[in-house]
Image 1 (cartoon, rainbow, N blue to C red):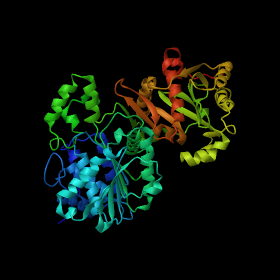
Image 2: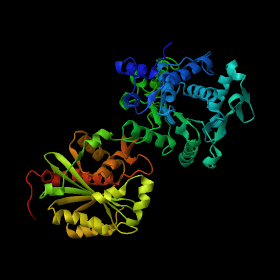
Image 3: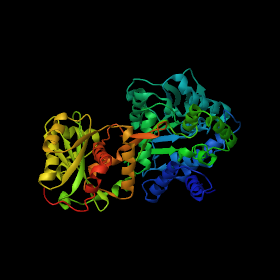
Image 4: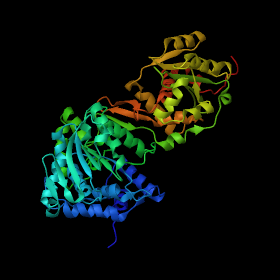
Length: 555
């Protein structure tokens, strides 16, 4: 009997319109299909079908149903991606799996079934499987689900022994246990599988640290996995937000990650939150584990109450109150690059922007020059000389190359010498006859730099960083997508644009820019936005001049 390819089957059903899926799921399967076509990884149909078959032959319902599980096509495709996509060594490609899905879509049952497969059939002797949560009682859901499955199937039950704190499978020396957050180092763990259930409820720093502890402990296994599966929640700046930023960046093509598999079942249009058709995107099991009539009843309640609406958007649409997602696509930013020099814009008017480092971070200064309806960006970065080697290691960026290219200036020894930033703007006028009409800066900038610029004759304005930048960011997004924004030979600025995520506030309908991950830098982006802010704010005063329809020659 030939093996089935549920990945292709699911993707074909989405493309034909037979199955309704959101943009993130479509992006995930496009990524997988593209990777297979390019031989970035490979599909082992035997391994994929083995996992699907085991779940359907040995795993029983333990809540809201009875008998063996019957996987839906989306579940078969997901399981096939997890176990059937392999690297050149024939080992599982994806080590981190992040699934976001609406409530009542059987996520705990699926997680328990995956635990069962990896405990009994994954050919990993001495496997350790953890159900991880902030507290032991919170970790019990997936753990108990697994145990209920084991008890319901005689062939699994006879091989398992329920002990005081774990479940032991003697034949493979496998241990399945609940685990609460611990300050222990990764040396104490040796996980084959970690199940993180409802990571949206994990609060702040402890959750982030525990995730990293378990991730760093994966190294001693041949093909380990961390499965994080959750509905959206209300906790800000926790592991859910970090995974969401990483996931969306990866799906947009902005990330160099290879081992992450994100499956984000989220609605596309928040204005259609009360549409059954739109809700199919965040609830792939609609019509199976949860019926359309359930949503119709919940919608009726949510339409009468703002608090209920927020809950509905969070739990059934997977729209977090303050969600963070990657912003620009790689292709858009890549298309913005150009080879251009300041000399080509001699005699032009411009606006500038500055993002000053507080300690030893990067400082960025940008000048934006418009010609023929296209904005050309020239950005200069500054870094203390003593910071170079360490920054290359921590940021993972070859700053020495950018120094050689002249994009990055080593300025000062331990702190940026802001006289170099001042000189950048002075040289624009004295050397290139480029006349910067306004300079935007963040209000935490060094006052003496601003005073020096004013003394030279520049007009400056502070730019408050936050949700108030939303109109400028929207304008910039439109400009760069229309290919009306060009970056002059500066891969570092391009990288900073790709490092930006937007944190949306569903209550205010606004957003603010944040880093895609902690070590990422966005200083160049901020300097561009500061320049665009003064351009937009003072358009009535300087807008005509900035069009440079008649180039100015000389002072």
